[in-house]
Amino acid sequence: MTRPMGRIVAFAPERGGWEGPVGKLARKMQLLGNDVWWIHRDGTDKPVTEFHNDNESKIHRGAFEWRKLLNGARWLISAGPTLTSDNEELASWSAALTFAELEGTLNALVLSSSKENFTHIWSKIVPRIRQFHIVAITQQEIERISKYEEWNIPQNMEQLIDILNRIQKKTLVPHLIAREAKNSGWGINSHTYGISKIDQTGECDIGEWIGGFLHGLIQFGHGENATQKALKEANQ
Image (cartoon, rainbow, N blue to C red; front, side, top):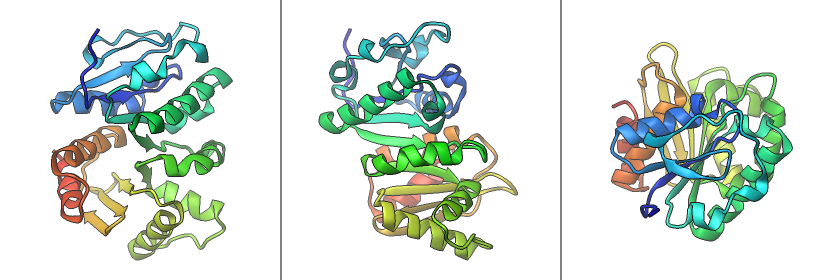
């Protein structure tokens, strides 16, 4: 089996991962014409068009040959719900991040937390935060991070942007993206070059929206003007 160079690799080993943000992102990017592969719970990988439901299969960290699975991959996509899973799923995710660094694969994470599991997820992300090139969060998650860090909770858009910038400067994530879907939505990318913003994003799932943004980055690059174009691409 020949794995295409520059492909996007999606990994959500928890049961139901296909229906979560990673699965939605993967399907969106495939529809936009990208080579997207899905890593299954049994350690095999296939194009997303050949996905098979393996929710009932047992997962074991030793089944994943990460050098082969990530060889030539440009992006590895994961999400917060994996971090609430069992030890085998968490260990597999941790190994994936490590090998992605070794293989030169960029990591993107959709935080996708709830009020109940945010602290559990974020406390596991923080020690690895500089392994990520993209982290996507919501307005509520900005507020939760503020509370976690014992900062003032933002009360308006200006304060939200200030907090987003503060998080980006602390974590040094190249693209820290916040998105809100309510009331036509908005999207903000706090990045290495400053701030890019779009005032409307529609109401699609954050996984789909980030899929459009990542597609835009692949098209336009990572510079200041390119990130603004990528935000607009997320709405397509």
